[in-house]
Length: 111
Length: 119
Image (cartoon, rainbow over all chains, first blue to last red; front, side):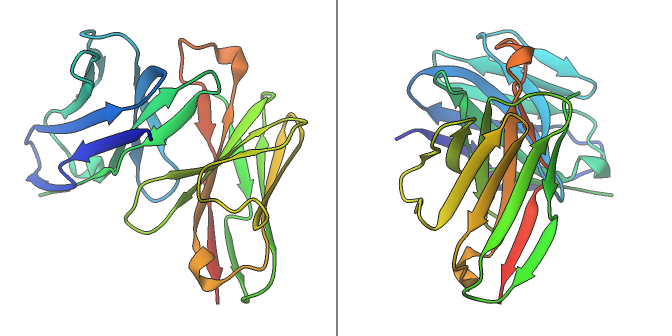
């Protein structure tokens, strides 16, 4: 059975802190690892990672994949209160592009 | 970017009734659509994969007779929760795959979700 695990489950930080969110996966027919941000509604896409060791960046967010260790991290630097959300990672598998989501990390950024 | 809509955004119904949720891809043709369920403070759980013109593929533990999925056109998939009960109350999210984007990009685009409350 495909499995994706995220840690920590929840995190409270002060504005300006840097956070690292973790995602490990055990799936068959792995194709890529995706990160999403979910506020009150459906997830919004952040990154898709297919190759090991290549960092993807978007503003204060960055992510990298380690296909040997079956692991990905999402970094957020200089956090802001608007970063408060649930961050989901998902493993995309097979030809049908099925997504298996992790448990999510609930991030709260306080003033 | 590609847009996916869901209707209704929120529905409240009585126990025993059936509820239909629509998922539409607005500016692309979606050969495949996915239906997810999310309980409070939990992650998204894939319920089924729906391919246009064929029967949906359900994940283990999801009752196909209870959650009827129809994907009659390349822009519309529907999920009908039959004989809904309070334990079916959840956030239902669809996503649509845009094959035109290719495997190098994010293929799935999510709808805004439908919050179902069964009294």
